[in-house]
Each structure stands twice: as structure tokens, then as C-alpha cells.
Length: 154
Image: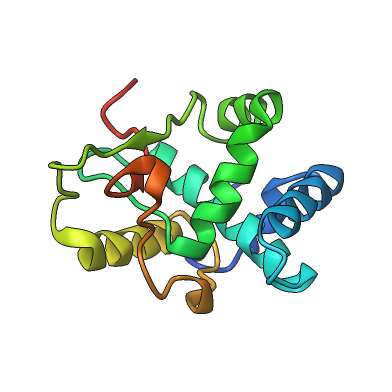
């Protein structure tokens, strides 16, 4: 008889969710879009974006939101639609949609609480939270008031 042990929270580097070639491609895309970032930071962003998607797919209820920097990685990943869809299916079991909030819509609990809720969800999913990349919740222009995942869809 084998016993499955629960994965300790916060111990898995989320970049390992991606195959190395895809991680490198997404890192290059982040650097191209944001040349002020170095390769190491861009790679960390890609890893946190993968953790964000993985945690978002497991969560129901109040939406999770990326940080401003992690949003760079999520947007880069979404642009690779085939890879993103395959990742979502493999890791989450369904597609995790990007749901922009409308200008008059607020994220439940406000941006700070949503960011804290997201970091806690990533940790609870067993992935390391790179706190340096989570200073502020995303507020992207193309997403009006911010971006969040799709916890209500099935």
C-alpha cells in the first residue's frame, strides 16, 4: 500500500509547471514587451504567472488578481493561445479565462485584499510565492480597472 503525502505549501518552484522551451519563449516575450526587465526577473515573472493560472483554476469564489509584474507574464502566456490552452487543460483541467473588469466594477475586497488572497491561494496550491513580484495589484489599461481570472466558469 502506498500513501500519498500532501505537498507542503509553498515549496514548488512554479517555473517547473512549464517545459523549458516554453518558459524560455515566454521569458523572451516578456523581455521584448518590457525591455527594462532583465532575463532573470522576466523568468521569475513567467513562473509566477504559471502559478497564478494554476491557483486560479483551483479557486472558486472571489476572483484572484495578478500583480502588475505578474500580469506581464500572464498576458505573454495568453498570447501563445495554443500553449496556454494546453497548459490550462493539463494543470487545471479546464481553460482559465482572462476576465477584465469594467470601469465601474470593483474587485471584491479591493486590490490589496485581492492581491493578498491571490498570494495565499498560490501558497496553498503548493507553489513558492516570489513576494518581490507582488507589490501591487495589476491595473492594466486594456483591462480597464484590472484583470482577474474566471472562478465562476466551469
